[in-house]
Amino acid sequence: MKGTASFREAAAVALDSLRSSKLRSFLTLLGIILATTTLIVVMSMIHGMDVYIADALSDLGSDGFVVVRMAFIGDFDPKKFLEFQKKNPELSIDEFNFLKSHVTQLSDIGMQEDRQVKVQYQGDSLDSQDLVGGGGNYGVLNNVELSAGRFITDQEDEHRMPVAVIGNDVKDKFFNGVDPIGKTLRVDGRPVQIVGVAKAKGSVFGQSQDSWVLIPIRTYFQYYGSRTGISYVAKTGDRRNLDEAQDEVRMLLRAYRHLRPNQDDTFSMVTADAILTFWDQLTRVIASTAVAVVLVFLLVGGIVIMNIMLAVVTERTHEIGIRKSLGARRKDILNQFLVESSVLAGSGGFIGVVIAWMVAVIVRNTTPVPMAVPASSVIIGVGLSTVVGLFFGIYPATRASKLDPIEALRAER
Image (tube, rainbow, N blue to C red; front, side, top):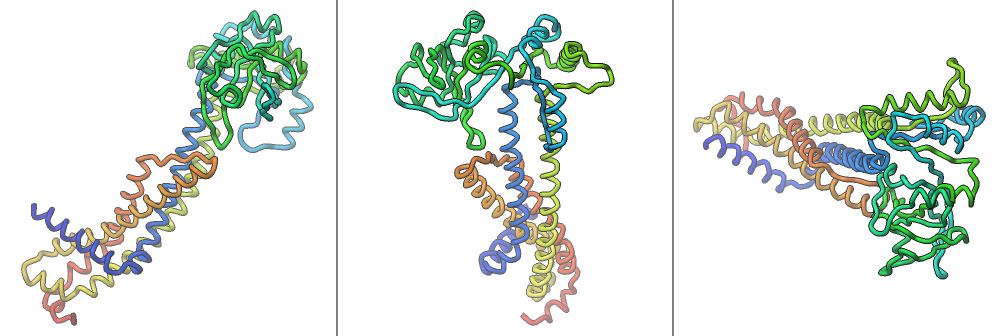
């Protein structure tokens, strides 16, 4: 009980000191505030991006991968791009049919292609909508769920039927409060009948994930040709078989293209793990830079707190002498000043948390950058600032505890 009372008294003294000299307190805590704000803002940005990456990769899933003509994960290299342009042929329908008839490690595989189009309905129009060509297994391969209707069937794909599944933005634009199933849209002037509506996914980085129209892949080829932009989306059904499935697809494509053992692949495969690995590397670099900045701020803030606490010890020398003459032990004086320095720094950490939260809210609501303040960052921010105050308060507290009571009483008040 005595220890709790001492702590409460020391904390009250520290807070009273903050209130009595607001400008000095602010300048004292500026380094701690900047450190905590920087730390939490960076952690919030990384956490928000982690959520975005997880949502984006949920379509692919941990058991899926995509085969494309060429892919760059990380730094874009213009020389490699030109090299791939020359040596990597476009993926073809024939190659897809060969893969589909020979693979044994996949649960499903499909072709996809997309482009930007103009969508119209009864005089209204939407520009720059994503038109996707896909098969009857599009929903399974891309983890797309429907809010109404059904997906395209394999029979509709084989017969090149003009049917479509639309995203939620298209539905809201043309069919707000109206059932769109059975209605006819015009895609680049071509009529397609709506058979399904996808569930809304929302926006990321200001880019809507619901502005699209899906039509059968063979209908797409009939409209736009099949010479460029085809990709293959594959699922294994089991995360443990992913590597074996990729090896099998790689072997089959190399055999179809008659590549010799010493020749590089003339195609690329992208998995969720590859994207996550790159993202982890990127966030480590960002976090390392942020940590360096935070450490500088904390060092500066800690030194300022130590200097202020030394000044406080000098100002309160007579008070320390009175306390010691009344029986206060060195431990009591030490604890008092340690608590004061910790509360001082912890208050700076709390202010930094509030500022960082306000920054995160403003950025999230006014820009396309996703930000989410994790609870762990708040705990780390306040806890780290308190520890800094404790560490840099050790010397002033020790100096105060070692004061001779008689000499301290002689000090001018």
